[in-house]
Image 1 (cartoon, rainbow, N blue to C red):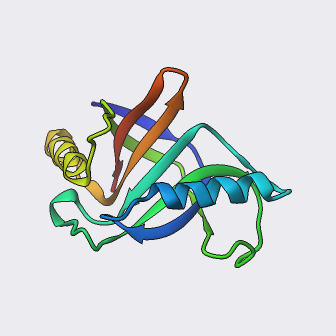
Image 2: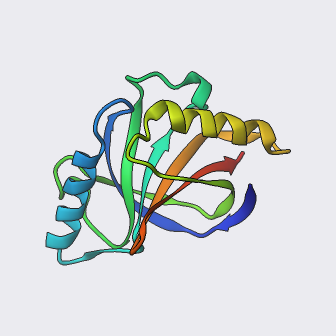
Length: 146
């Protein structure tokens, strides 16, 4: 686990249930970014945001699926998508191996382990980040300092 300084960023996201196939949401986000004249990806990462500690997450919980972007869109301009400006802060991260069998329960176990290891009280919001690389996808779970 490592502590990381998090910069300001803008997230383009859609909402879904934790148990649903969030790849559909990601595809919609990517298509919107590609077709919008004022938006572009800020990185090759995509994120899942959870708003309760993993031990409290139910399969019907709302999560956000998103990408950090640069640019601007007007509210309501892209149906089903919204932006959120994230303020800089401190995060605690743990890398994990992404496999084809990765499921929600795997993510919740890693989050619980990380939450128990850190010395400060984390916020209830946390995220799972995936980085697309030439050799595959890398995973990272991040908690935010409260």
